[in-house]
Image (tube, rainbow, N blue to C red; front, side, top):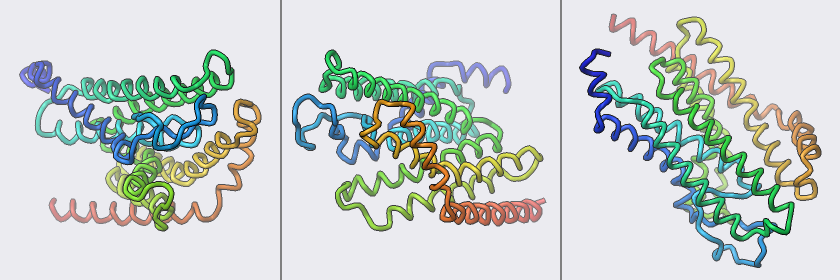
Length: 300
């Protein structure tokens, strides 16, 4: 970067644009939940009996039954913002950190608003279970926010290998995010019959395309291939294990039992069905890499 371009990147307009990109990415991540109604899910520890349509509006689904959804819509905000900054920075010099700040601002507002609303209906002063519940979910939301920042910095990186790695690691949450768009239209009572296929195969396509973008040179990018394919195989089972442990009301709050339940069911969820998306992703990646190499050779 020249001195003139560095000076332009430091001017307020050059900082405002990436900040808006970060805000836009963060909002896009939350959008399928917001358009789906954004009602706080029913709470087991809610003080006053309330109908689902009367629950407050929240930017995040604060519930132990929606932890994967919450994680996905927060993480994808960082991915979208990072890719937007990476694409736009090819045409003009941009300061990257304001975009990360924009993503963080969206997530901070969402956490404060959502957990504030959830806490207002729980008996935090008289029920220890409510305190454990809200603090545990808040810790998970903060962890998702930090991972969204990591995802942003990876996907906005100049190295195609690092950016592609960030996209590949977020492929499984992206499947959940895409599924939320369908549920925003149909509702959760009667979900589309093809929704499980969407959750299973969208990540496979994304990982395959990301690895084709990554390529195999230099040699360290082969490690990206291995880790990305392993993540595609293991993350769905890990998500289901976490959801099982958090959704088991009899052990909710007993962390030792919750960990044992999640770890115990994890091997059973790593079945043969999880291998097929990995094979499909590998085929897409190999074919895409070969096509890129042939096109590059033709141009040369």
